[in-house]
Length: 284
Image (cartoon, rainbow, N blue to C red; front, side, top):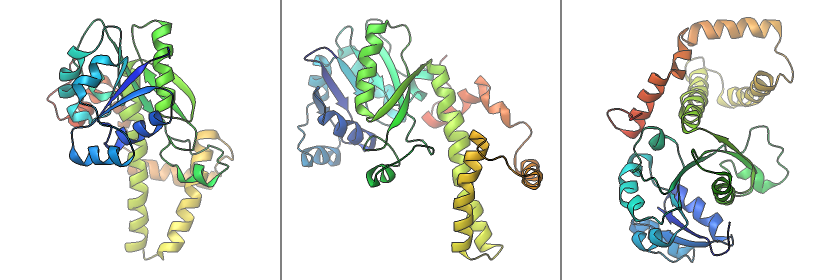
């Protein structure tokens, strides 16, 4: 980033805002931290960070980061975008509002979205700090997927530098379209992967409470076999046995609907994002 670049973080004392603020505070950027809630302001102050009114921060920022919940991104952007400096970048941390057309529009600023991948299950962790950093942004390296449409390489480089800082340590930033990012998050990782993670926990409870298996035995075999299932299924590291394939096919027939791939249709993506943002419909 050019010398003297200023970044404003709106919602700096919230859950995601705190993560972003901590990394920016350790950087060479000039950073202004804005937070409306009393609890968030107290968190910032306890971290030794000064709180700046949003209006003051936005007017002088080269990059404005909206670290606020998805359901209020539209409202917050309507207040923030008109006050931004021409040529500046508005960065959101989730694609739902951008895909749904909820963000305030303005032709002389750039709109970017960047979402962390979180440290890979296959990441080679070498320290205790990396193992403890399951979310990313502290010690474990992660990748990031981002979208910034209609901008030149210089603007993208500016955005990538900030993105790599707020999610550091970052291995790589992958650039896609806003729609593609929305397919990744929520469809691929929330509708499917996160659902399966929670489903595994429900299956563990059912194994213990209904089948009567001791919890420690059930937990041990599930945790170990989940690793094998992921490395075999995603990387083909050690092919499943013939008998395992028979059980897998039985499970797919019993559990998964034949029409499950419909969730990748744009109409289904529109539906789930509208539900997430609590709006009637997306604007595309």
